[in-house]
Image: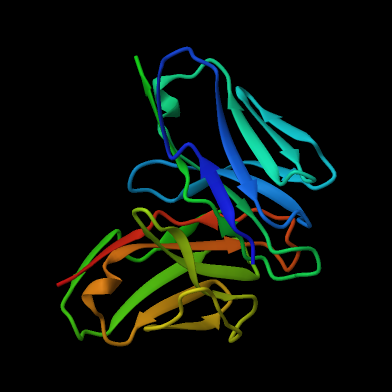
Length: 115
Length: 114
């Protein structure tokens, strides 16, 4: 079973800062890693999915990297804005060999960006 | 766009009641999931289904059952609701059996059991 840890649990920054959210997982034999965003009281929205063969994936101001050997991923948010305030979760599937699409989630980093 | 809908955003029930939470997806996805989310505990998988009439226990199935009679609909059933089942319930779906695809989430149902 995967154990997924996210650090820090909460982060509060002024607008415009570049910031890094961290995710670590225990079993490096993964197909991919995903980052999700959750707004208060809402469901999750997929932000980025990095396949195991990739080292990073970019979408706008977001960049996610994956280092399978060390069991780590980072989500980099450039020039943060108040609209980025949300909880960010990372998730990994079971180890290779599993064909069922379940995910293991970290507990998330709650980000607040103030004007 | 993929759409996952949940029957209620907020629900208040009494202890001992039978509770049905419904989830519908409109993209012909094979997999469907039910999670609960609690402060400090994160998302925990209750049950999932990879085909009609197929179900698998997740990490916390006790006190819950599920039903998938049609591909697009996945129901979570609390046979006899208890106060410790007060939580946010999230439904999700994903396209197929491969683990390469993302999951698409519904807006959630916040359940309060009195």
